[in-house]
Length: 139
Image (tube, rainbow, N blue to C red; front, side, top):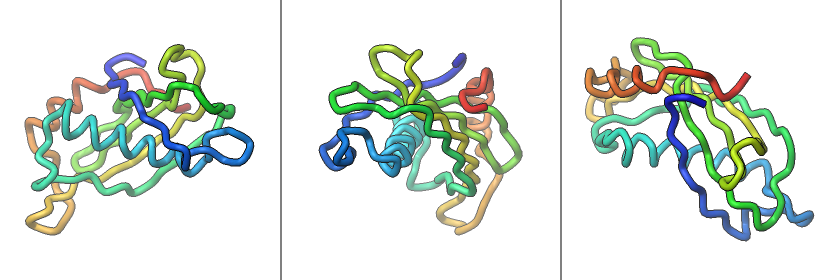
């Protein structure tokens, strides 16, 4: 995926089911970690002023990730509206990104925490998000 961030994920024992696979609920948590990490650390969004509220999440589970597999999440932007962002994500083998375990699309709305309502993207953030537009991760 072009113009995307790759965030390594530290898995925990509680992420696995009795069959030694990552539980489907853990994938949502991995994507949230990647989303927050990208906005806070990579895009330098002040999360005390602005946040992204998730309006929709669609996940397609492609194959199980087994115990001991290093995990990463690749995140890019596929659509950028006045107040919403469509994020495309892939949960992949951190050592071999061609091994995709799940793909997702998350629609989030930019939220002004002080005002307590949805808002237009701050101009600096909009420019950064524009630069992430590219190939989509999820079909």
